[in-house]
Amino acid sequence: MEPPVQWILPLGLRCLLVDRLKSANLRIHALPFDWIYATLPLIRLIILSNFTPLLHQGSYQYTSPPKQLGIHPRVGHKDYAAELSRCSADGAMFVHHDPLTDEGMRHLSRAVARFRRIIATGDRKLFLTVGIGGWCTGTSGFEDVLRLFECLKGSTSNFSYVAVDCRLGVGVSEARLLHKEGDEGGCRCKIYQLDCVGGNSGQKFERVEDADALSALLLVPDTGEGRIGTPYKFNLKKLYI
Image (cartoon, rainbow, N blue to C red):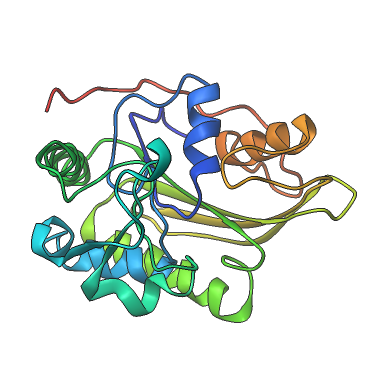
């Protein structure tokens, strides 16, 4: 039986992950990978660097005007430009927050401080990644998930890591468990492919059955052959940072 989860930590790659957590009342506070464009190698690089380049305000630049028609500015990071070009047409990393402002950098700094504090604990943690169109299940994507899993094992302990790749517009809602592994220390990794009936805006699914199917994969442990089991027990904590 899975122990109660005390911390949920999103690891990209789309805003729809945090939207699903909010819908389930499981988003307790902001963390650094909540609302950004990223790739799995980039998230791994940021964790390995202890977030130091991410917190360097001088490395950020606008990829679109900061106050264009009241729309949130799009902000890129010079050090991560090559990797961001793989997931964002204009190289933007932030589209909901602006780390070039003092307020935005304070928000990011607090989020990073929480992440660092959480992974230093022995509490049970649930790391989650959601990708679209092969980011987690293509040949390189599959390997990227496992590399990130190894990175997490080197940074923390006592966790599950669930990665889901969504194939949009397939016409049916069907999930497949592609990979599952764990160790004696309680670190587990599962990789799923989720076929979806409709599309996705980046944050919202067009069809409620697709949203529900994703929530089930993220929040219900695998029980063997099938994916329907007893939901994780949550005893979530909060950091006042």
